[in-house]
Length: 141
Image 1 (spheres, rainbow, N blue to C red):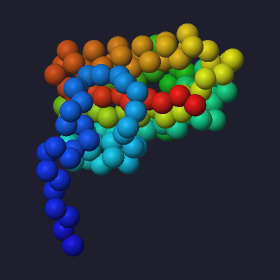
Image 2: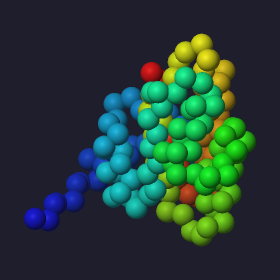
Image 3: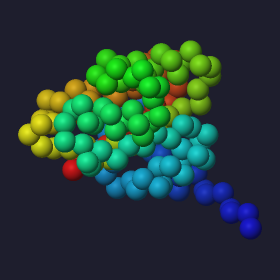
């Protein structure tokens, strides 16, 4: 049976500006995934609840985003994987990224969390310069 298309005001990303990094707040992951599909955007999801360190967090992102095996597992490599190779692979429709349950523990302190989010803010700026929508939503554990 065909599903009726949602009215525009019901699309979860309707009121969210593009090229932003923000708390997931009232959104549910499945709603963001559906919205990405409706918009024809890439949907990247990582559940980071099990990460105990910056290194583990980067490994989990690399695995769940299916980065290449040569991924350097540092913040510079993360930025590189989120920008230039994708740009060079051809036209991009847009991105919805979810970083769920970023750890808040002694091995992954506030500074490291801010550095991580800064990478995604920089990626949002990169895509904004190219007029490509990039939205990143996150939550803390």
